[in-house]
Length: 105
Image (cartoon, rainbow, N blue to C red; front, side, top):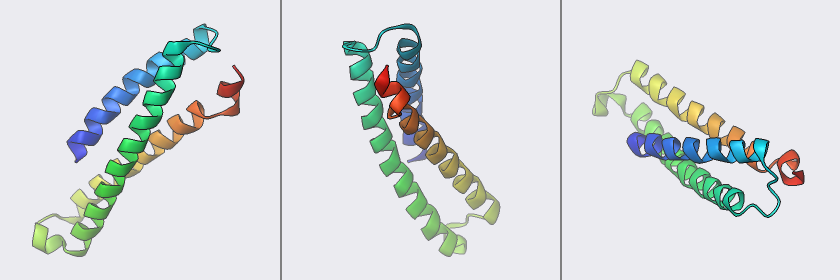
């Protein structure tokens, strides 16, 4: 699932960068590409949030049964850090895309 999250994030980054470029340099009112990107970014965020939730559940299971899975505390910490970093990034993008400042432009 981590690989899927990373691939989704790469696509999200591409869309988000293009979205920011349009937001900064163009009138977004009625801009079809901007509207499409906004929709796709929201869909990708929703999708990645589900994947992150799956990762969180998996980490919790592994954490409770670390010996059974042969994963040490360091690796669990690394996985938690990855999940938290992704969740923070998603939240930041979501807030920007849905901000009043963005809607007013």
